[in-house]
Amino acid sequence: MKIYKSILVLFLAATVFVACEDVLELEPEGNTSNEALDSLEAFQERWAKLYAGLIIGGQQGGDGSADIQGIDGGFSNYGRLFWKLQELTTDEAIIAWNDGTIKDLHWQNWTPDNEFIAAMFARLSYQVTLNNAFLRETTDAALSNAGLSDEDANIVRSYRSDARFLRAYSYYHGLDLFGTMPFTTENTAADGSELPAYISRTELFEYVESELLDILDDLPAGRGSEYGRVSEGAAQMLLAKLYLNAEVYTGTPRYTEALTYVNALINQGYSIDTNLSYQSLFLADNDSNGAQNEFIWTLNYDGDNTQTFGGTTFLSHAPVGGSMDPSAYGLDAGWGGIRTTPEFVELFPNEENSSDTRENFYTDGQTKSIADVGAFTDGFAIVKFQNIASDGTPGVNPTFVSTDMPVFRLADAYLMYAEIVARGAGGDAATAVGYINTLRERAYRNTNNGITATDLTLDFILAERARELHWEGHRRQDLIRFNQFTSNGIWEWKGNVQNGTTTPSFRNLFPIPTTELNLNSNLIQNPGY
Image (cartoon, one colour):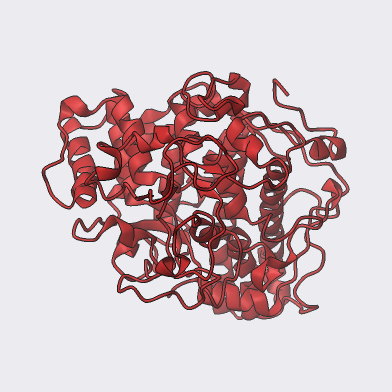
């Protein structure tokens, strides 16, 4: 079952959560349309919102009735904000728009008053708040008072591990982006009588780690049975990512543990069909065209049920402009915003003549170099996420896209394994080469472009991750882990000069927003800001 059918229908029918701007009142105001928590369906509506908060930005279609007061629902969509911070800050993406301080992201000259950074911080806090509330509402005592049958009460109890995973997931993003978050759990006073505590980066790492380890056996086993619901496999992947980046987060490498959980995840039975095209992974039927066998966890979109201007709607419309025909991608319009830099283009051999099908540039009428950031035709466009099915049929809605977003997929796990080997931290070189060559066989549609163990260098891994995973929300994290994000690594318009320049390393973390510091005296600004 595609989980959005249970999530969004239930949620849009009845769930009303509102997050306040005041840090003391981050708890949702109200419950579900004055509906008491006295049935399985009522609890499922609450559980639904935990997922829906990652997918849409408000209570109504098109992100209406925004989750976060004072911020447009489309603007504050979790996936859209996260993508901007992880991709627009890198060589993979640049945007033409003049929305507020959006160009500062690529220029790497943002300040604590940047509204996109502030909105992401608020969104993370909001998601943590939702999950805390659900955990308070589903204790054994609360379920006993709800009068549920034993069978229904056990179903609700099973959702608690989802809530703990999703809270850990948002805290993991806070750890990666900001180094800290206002720290609350279900044991924090729900009435706003205490300020959320400050937590160090190492302490937050340890908390996320402990939560994921504790719920591994409680999540749906293996790959799970509901497409889009988190599972044991998703937790193994998140743990592997946490450990892979541990040296950045805590100063202590944890590659041995990363390898343990990468192997556990790979052995769960996910698969890559080398006969399936790379493009199939990002089409409107990627929940059923074979791509789903590679996906570890997805955020599910449907043009009728998840009408948002974030997610894959954003990633399909925003890169279409110039001479591109929106209808060719199942869309009613292009938004003329996102392109890529020449440095990313050059990661592909022979550039536009490459036989690597992951090289998905649109070049007609586009210049490779970017003289004018505000001109869409400056810079190659990328055609990756499309609102058409494998047979060319458009999605059900030309405005709101039906393509699911892979949060984690097996290709990433293969590349993580290869990176651990390249770092000399364990694993087997022949196995790593085999994993990489599986990806390259799919990319090139033949077996003639494989690598050998001598090719397995860190420079190759970083470039191959970009070729395989570009625009999926990984690049900033990768560049930081490889020490190529700020004080090293140059691409066009980094540092707000056309040829690019290095930036201070304190920008490996985003600042704590000024608004949050003013509201919560426990928080501490990151160094350099």
